[in-house]
Image (cartoon, rainbow, N blue to C red):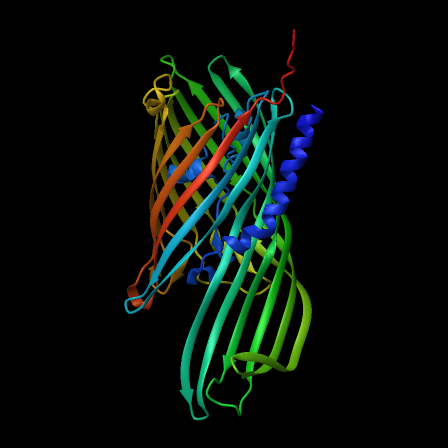
Amino acid sequence: MRNNFNKILLLIALIVSIQMNVKGQYSISSPYSKFGIGNTNKAGNQVNASMGGIGYAFARNNVVNFLNPASLYATDTMSFIFDIGFTADWRKISTKDNHSNSFLGGVSNISFAFPITKSLKMALGLASVSDINFSTQTDSTITTGHYKKIFEGDGGLDKVIVGLAYGRKLTKNNHFSFGMNASYIFGNIYKSNTVSFPDSSSYYGTRSEVNYNVSAFSFDLGIQDFQKLKNGDIIGFGLSYTLPIKYPTDNVSLYYTFYEHAANEYVQDTILNNKTSGKISMPQSIGIGLSYEKPNKLFTEIDVNYTQWSKFLFQKNDVNSYLKDSWKANAGIEYTPNIYGNYIKKLSYRFGLNYDNGYLKIGEDRISKYGLSCGLSLPIKKMGTRININFEYGKIGTQNNNLIKENYYRIGLSLSAKDRWFVTRKYL
């Protein structure tokens, strides 16, 4: 047990060290990240992603699924699960007249789970909440000459998750569990507004900057119920609820003038340097999932999620009229030809799709999203350990009314390792 405890401490240290570089590695440019807290991300993994992002009625003994904390009860009573995922994202951003490309990647998630008692299981993890990376520019000419306006944003939020799940058999063929994720949210949101006169040395440029430093806690609740049928198949139901929460923020506002020389900027005068406090009001969210499984052969699931984004509030009086309540639907399937056959037949094939009507409405256009995904799970000799590979293609937004469309291609890779740590070995 002492050796196992040391391994757990080593993994916690690994999570902390990886966090120092995660956001810098994985924050892709998107003009729509200027709204709300940026592009929001669910705490899924590569297994979830390859099946369209499902997870509310999904539970495995070798996968850490934070989408529904009740699923953590599936962890074996004598096993330790470790999961780390990586993602590479190619994105084409286009209007009717112009387009640009970007590529970024890095660590997408890291988590592990282990039993506390036979009925109580625990998990720890690190995941992204949102990322912000945008820059828009307009050029104009007035009587004093040519000037440009630049709006920029950067940063995002991450969270450390502690999940607990308790479960038991209600009857011989019925299994029920409930769980909770307690998450520590942290990060920084930076936004700036710049006006400059690049062709004139007679006017100073001006820039206003605000840094919102976030430090808060959030909570997710979940239940799962699995009913075994007479033929051995299993029907699953899952429900997950995210409580509405307020994120306290420490704000640093800076307003100054500057001049440019030899492609460098030099501050001329600081007009404002102010520290305040505020809050970001995050909305409630609820997800429901239904699954059907032929054990070791076929698994299918359909999820629906509703998020009340109309209740989002950034700081005290900053009401964002662009944000609307959103609905999202996910569907996925996994097929394994023969778990007892040769290596090729033991491979698991995954497919999925998702649709989100979008929480942004600009003018008359809803910024919706849809995606298609597929994946492959490769078993390795160690029992319960798999390498998961997935690919996703999707579209966000539209080119109508001078808006922006994003096409993205995403490749994910993860290692889900399962090891028996809680066994006392006897030697003769």
